[in-house]
Image (spheres, rainbow, N blue to C red):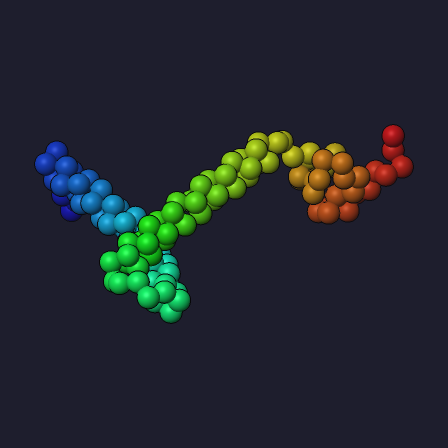
Length: 118
């Protein structure tokens, strides 16, 4: 027998999902940040004689900048994908399935060939 939902119960369920999703997103950024900062700190430890604080600050800043730039690059890559996906595919005149390219003269699905047609 299903239970009835109440507005208060729905509120707390939504709040839990919101907080849980925020924790997941935070962990998805903190784990690569920590790994990258640790690698940069290790490199600075091997090649410099700086104290702990400058090495730590530079490693955190460099890893934040690196992740930010990679995020910008991935967003740019998605914009190109949206532009390419916005084009309508050319259908095969025989079977109606999408051709591989817009200038294709042969269907890879049904094998129809219209090279000789003008």
